[in-house]
Each structure stands twice: as structure tokens, then as C-alpha cells.
Length: 328
Image 1 (cartoon, rainbow, N blue to C red):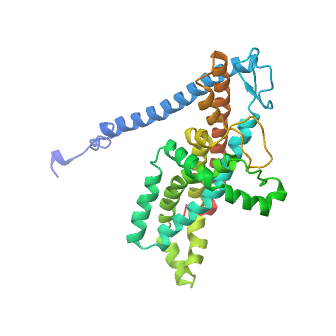
Image 2 (tube, one colour):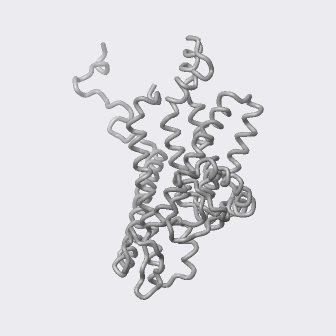
Image 3 (cartoon, rainbow, N blue to C red):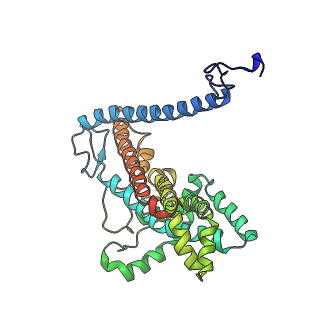
């Protein structure tokens, strides 16, 4: 052993790169941009909430009616007198109707495209469904007002004959510009959103799970029921919440179809009602300073309602995640 080969204990040269940052510049830039984007989003959301709250407090303090229970909207009066009872009822009812119609249909279309239809048929149908999401809402509104409304009268007469005794589906023969019509129109509008997301989730189901079920003798429907639906449950909930978000905030289509009034009808087939977004769109042009503050107050309620819905969806997904098969 030569002198140069001897090594003093504890004097080994440090490995290459040790003691120096191994993170590349591009990774650091991307990480900082991502963090900045997240922080910016929170700041924007907080700024919107603060702005809405400040303007809403001004209107609520000047309001001579009960903001939550008054069945009137006279925000430009002296003194102002307005409430959101009709708007809250109409927004929730029309959105629930849309979800009841759209979610089962969307799940059925997604299952057909992902597990039943041949590829040469599934691909163009999938493109068509995605294209429906790009149609402007005003186009849906014109279609609903000029085509859908006149053709729903017969359907409403039939519902009145069969279920009119419930009161919910009683029909007086008036033009079909009701919350039910709005719900049907919203269902058509949110259908492509729910379908597209649900189809992508179903297609991510592990092939090993499906093949194992087939090996055990399961039919195609049993494979879907045992493997695909449990795996995609969280995705279906997420897709539904995306659709519900659009239904809650839809403006122009609802304003074109609905015949607004500040009355709460027991029947969803009778003309009248209103929603937050529709009321803001129709009242904003003629609103004065106090009227705009009142509309902003109603917008704050819609903002909070949307946050609550999405928060509830996140809780549902978190509770069901361990049972969905997504972690398998």
C-alpha cells in the first residue's frame, strides 16, 4: 500500500452533490408558481367574500322587510323592502329537479359509452356529448322558450291527470314557464358535464377487478354493479356537484324561460317563481344604489349556498372513499 493510498479516518471526501441543493431550477420555479397560484386563488375567494359581505350589510341594515322570509322585492323603494324566500325556494327546487333528471341519465350514458358501445360508436357519441357542453346558455334559453315550453303543455296535462292529487303536479293550463320547465332545461344543460366526468372515472376502473369478476362467472351487469359503480362512486358525486354548481348559478337560460313572480306555488308546474341568478340578471339594469346592494346581498347567499354544497360533497367523498375501491 502506497502512502497516497492511506486514508485518515473521517477525512473521506463528501459525495458529489452532498451539502448542495439537488433541486433543479425548473422544479423550484414550478413549485413556487404552484404555491403562488393556490395562494392567489384563496386571496381572490376571500376578496370576493369580503366585497359581497360589506355591500350586503349595507342593504340588509336598510331593509324594512325580513331578508330571509319576505315574499317581495322592492329594493328601490323608500324604504327598501325585499327578501330572498322566493329566490331561495326557486333556486333549490329547480336545481333538485335538474339533478333528479340528469344524474341517472348521465350515469347511464357514461356506462353505455365506457362498457357497452363499440369503440367506433362510442367515440363519436362521446365527442357529441362533449360538444353539448360548449353550447352557450343563451342558445339553450332560446331553444327552451321557443321549442320546449309550447311542447310541455301536453305532458303537464298528463301529469295533472295522474299525479295532480298530490298538489305538487297540479296544472292550471297556464304557459309552461314554471320551475319544472326550468329544471328540465337545466338538466339538459348539465347533462354533458356529468356524463363526461363520469365516463372518464368509469374508464379508470382497474381491469384486474373486472376480469376477476368475469372469471368468477359474473355477467356484464354484475361486473358493473360490483366493480365499476363502487370504484366510480366518488367520481359520480364529484361530477354531480359540478353539474349542480352550474344549475345553481345559471342565469340567461333561466331568465329566458321562467315567468318570474314573487310567489311560492305548491305546484312546480304552475308559472312563476324565481332564482337568485335570474333575479340579478333581470333587476340589475334598473336597480339604483340600494337596489344593487340588495342584489349583491342575494348574490352572497348564492355564493354561500354553492360553498356549502361543495363542502358537503367533499365530506361525502371523504367518508365513502375507503369503500369506493379507489385505493385498491
